Image 1 (cartoon, one colour):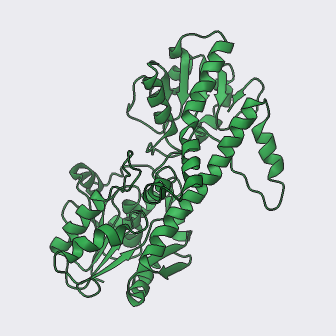
Image 2 (tube, helix red, strand yellow):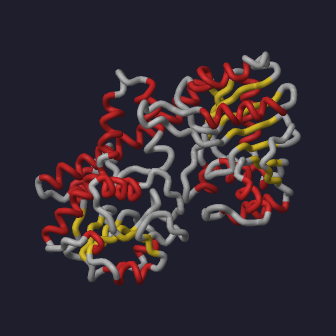
Length: 408
């Protein structure tokens, strides 16, 4: 293979491009965002991630290129976003379709076209194949179509790229084996070759499984709150059983995987996804549950001014700077719907202001509030527990062990 052109340099595409380049393969990364391309070319990463800087420097030494132009080559990996349509809960494939068409404009004969973007089962048959075939291109001859869904999480990307197993969906198993060898340049775990629809479905099922398990924990939290029981103690005891592994409840589910992928199944199979739909509704209800807890704590402590409330954490999980589908942003949206304005916000990983009343300095944030709502369990918070002890605390992540702390 001459050059691998990776399309989409976000949370998935960029680390993947760097890993291929680090392994000694010739890589060109393409993104429509000219400012991002310029920054990457000048040695600046768009987000922080453990180990990413080292991989980036090794990739630069291997002459990785970043551009807004699609490369004319024989191997492409598409890693663009796949949002869902909120009204119908169906996948919106517009970015993948656009990227595929741009590849078809320049690609060489016999191109291997790999889609890494997470899609709903049947998306490639329904949307991608027709885009290719209407150009008179023969799939399996002029273009080889594959699906290799990403399997990494922000905060641990480099490790997971190297150690998580992978799935390659292919029409032609011989081509699938060729792509398996490509990914084995950096992936040290098992790489399974299967058909495309199985690859599509397996990725969505993985995230849906986790969503349902989180929903069970969140529903337990609501049950225990209604009858004054300690959900964390109950989960701790239940998990002593060798075949029980209940997850921890939280203020909601964020990120671009667990909070989005299950909707693909709900949208495509509305009559067959009762459990999945209930889990999604349960997890989406948690920011409202947190809002209800805040209201109760304010009343109990005779605090009537919402500006005395502070939310710690804007990201969707700890120790990353990723705010996609963040429970805190969902909570702020609920507050806005109820005409409740002025709550203060702080996150050590978000350096620029993205919401109203966001503080950049932790000490200033703490000094301005009376009620502190812990939405994300950053290590920064765990290292500053002594600083927050004097506040009225709602701990949605079960971090604080001292007396007087409110829980979910």
